[in-house]
Length: 444
Ligand code: ATP
Image 1 (cartoon, rainbow, N blue to C red):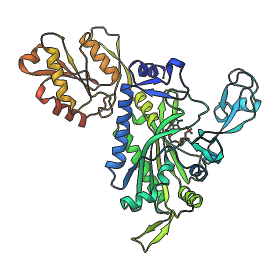
Image 2: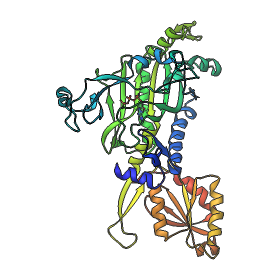
Image 3: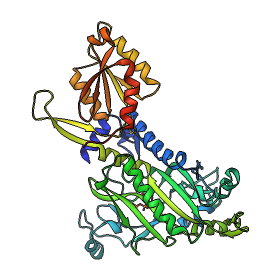
Image 4: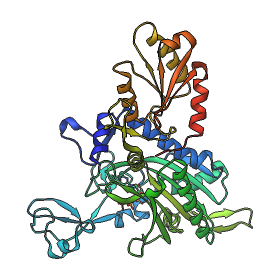
């Protein structure tokens, strides 16, 4: 993880928030390469969930919601973690994350000092809206995007004439006052989620739950993730949320071990039932194709962390490889083997020399490729070193322009994964890259 964190900083994927002031816990800034990667991961999910599914509509709900939302959802009462403090060193721990014996002996795992009793700590960030700081002005930063979907479910049925079964997809920020934030961007206080809530008829929920498990698994396969680094974890009785009928997490083998990446949950009719009760509005679905039968739909939720997916993709892509291309058998190159659809830069154009018109020729080629691809241009340093810089950024294709290019219009296309180089006419570049992306297979 240290290597990934340091590469992420060095190459401008992720920086610590407010670093010049010593950093802000639980918050991170996405740099030029990081924002491109995050946007592409979000784009891949969005395409999968909306473009490829006629029965799913998109939404972007506000972060600030009426405070009753969080009473109805159960967050005000139940969205808590068990917290203990050390009276001596003042460290704070999640009681369920420290060894049982420390908890029983009330002994701090760090300094051996005395621990406080376990108490419930609500993870929602609370503030006040407007000038008065009284109970009437309480407002929360949303701890999940799901509730924005539930409160809009009737609007979307009406505006888009949706019929059950159908889904609503949303990507957006969520905030949790996490007691322990560690492992880089894995668990943060400000993060982004990609959630899809699928509304189904009660009785068909188990079938749809299984179907969505299958689809989400297939999605990661399509992204080119190492499938032996993914597994299912079914929630046991002690983990299952009180409203959930069944829940599975997709876990990824991060450098610190197997951890949750995404959850697929059967949330029953709990959410819409509660919003009906708290708002006084009828949340029943009226099935016009079935004698106006009325029911509160069950919800199958697929809930993935976008920022956690960024970390997963970085870990999954990271590779160090022994290469001998510079004549040194022990040379190691660091390479991010991103799927070309996710890579922040798709193609880098490199003139062999700055002089003799090569730079101008290379800039011209870059300008042509820009319309279709995210490009980079680099003219400084030895060509081998420039390739390595692109490998580290995960750029799948490099185009090198040399003296022969001036004469016959051909260029060298170099592939990140195999380091193979081929010579092709520059006029064929855009089409060839497109073909390579479509047929991309991960080799390692
Ligand atoms: P945990 O038990 O690890 O706190 P959770 O089960 O509460 O997580 P969910 O509420 O199911 O998580 O959230 C759905 C997804 O949102 C998670 O699978 C994860 O990818 C992401 N997520 C949740 N909390 C955080 C966080 N603090 N930082 C980054 N991503 C998060």
